Length: 340
Ligand code: AHR
Image (cartoon, rainbow, N blue to C red; front, side, top):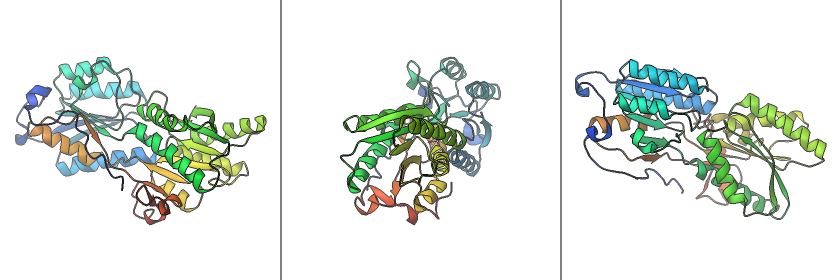
């Protein structure tokens, strides 16, 4: 099974925390650690799962957690980070809504000597590795590649491998690492297929509401152009679920007339797969709280962290699991146990 990629080590091993800018003002063993976390928002069930995981892990570790939900707004995240400096936190956790625009505030945090652990999404700035201890999350390019690979295998399985395939794409938040990387990964694979076309591609900002709205516009335009949509590739399950409503309201059968691919593996997607409305979900685990706390504990012990720590995953459907048992799991076996 492809559980693989637990820990990808770019820099390992044990050095003094002083070498990575540790900023605790008194020996941590003597007092409760104060941790600031700047969360993106509550845009999806995935994000809610992420927040719960961080809160629970910090509570179990006995940390004082200063948690800010930035409502998907970069300026609110920047403000939260500056407030954490003022509040004298020992560590900062941070999931950046978009990749760019963090240079100044990251420099301010570094100047304040506060170690940063990035969760889920990443930043894009010169020498970014100098500004955080570790990044923990999923390989988003790989997720896009897995989604496209599943599609190719599925079309072969149902005898449509040689047909012209018209794909529409619901992208995540513009400028965010999962939107950029999932698109790249998907295209990496389908570019080798001359019978595949992405005819429409637009952001749904990772929300169910916009996913529905944008899918309605995709369907309207396809109808006006006299073309059939064969596949929806949604960058998350939330948007896929909104699109499923739009497909049904247009008089079509989601999962059948239009193949629906989502990413995240949230409970509602499992239910949609079991109901036959969605065809596959590519897992991206939001349960990063324990790894976040373990990273803080390692820094407290004076260790240097790997710069990249990838989370585990599995992908779920109701068809190919039987053909490729090493690659896919049967969704209906997991629907009841999914907690987010
Ligand atoms: O950054 C991870 C993405 O953010 C998830 O796929 C999506 O659901 C969330 O909003």
